[in-house]
Image 1 (tube, rainbow, N blue to C red):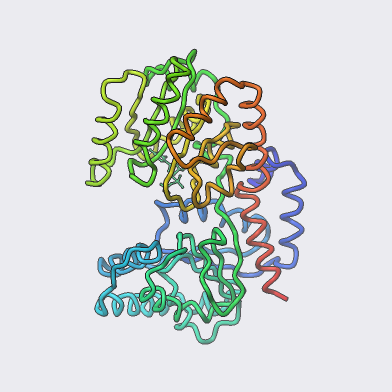
Image 2 (tube, rainbow, N blue to C red; image 1 turned 180 degrees about the vertical axis):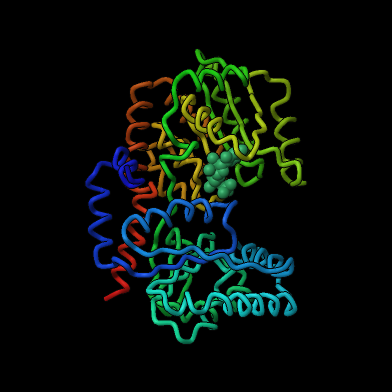
Length: 403
Ligand code: UDP
């Protein structure tokens, strides 16, 4: 059985038939994705699945990685941060390393890239490859996965010069799109329903996770899965929980995130969270290893309510993941959370701990509403935020650029 057939079991066979139909004009065409890492991070995670799925659709798809020395990554990290609004200039020396690394990588990749029908360049790292491929015959697309809504202008101007020559750009949200002299497309991220993070779990596995972390399956549970980061507002979540507890005295709160041992800010935030939780035995702070996907899955499934009270958020995959598990989500009224939490339908958008507490109280006392919102949440993800939709939009984009 093919991989696409596995997805058909989730999305229905019409969705898969449509993918085959859209891919029809691209049979045998050459597509190359380029980024700077094969593992780690959302881009690699998506490409790991996207590339074999495109191949299965009859498109000759390759995935190339560019590589460089330490200074190259220092520079591209600076670019990443600058696109996300950090006002920190990048030295000419680092920009020269960036330019040279792209030129060097182009030497090896040029034959492949110049021959390809479509080239997807992901994020800033390989963005300068285009200028080293003067004989290119296909369409080039710059795929930006970053929240570029308020870029630091000097850095963006440098990158823009290298991106302007592309045939199209793709951003995740309208708010992230920058002015460019070519068509811009909006394609939000997606989750994969067949990974450990999102597959259906047996009740026994969920129960075992609850037991391991001393959570009571009989009592209501509020869950936020997030790095310990101030933008995720864990202290606001604790405050909301404390207010809600006045009306739901059995409520338990789970704040689960990575260990953050090598991240000084993460450790500080974790200390703040521990202090705010004080000695409340009903606040469970869980430090999970990075690969605890099934644990995260189980916690999201066991939750009565998923909360993601971010103060700033690119997209918020934890929101998508919670909704996919049929949970209403209480989300901060920011960034990509607004695309997913349709206020009063798939959850509630909130701005303050008081607002969140009000919604927690309401939903815990209205089990029918909670279930109805959870069902709508799952449908919204099924229609909009699965990898099959992401693939469909890449195909549609390619068809549009062929004409
Ligand atoms: N995540 C995880 N373990 C943790 C914390 C987060 O696996 O301890 C996952 C989470 O399930 C989601 C991703 O990391 O898939 C976080 O993505 P999101 O867009 O929510 O936030 P980001 O961390 O990118 O700001």
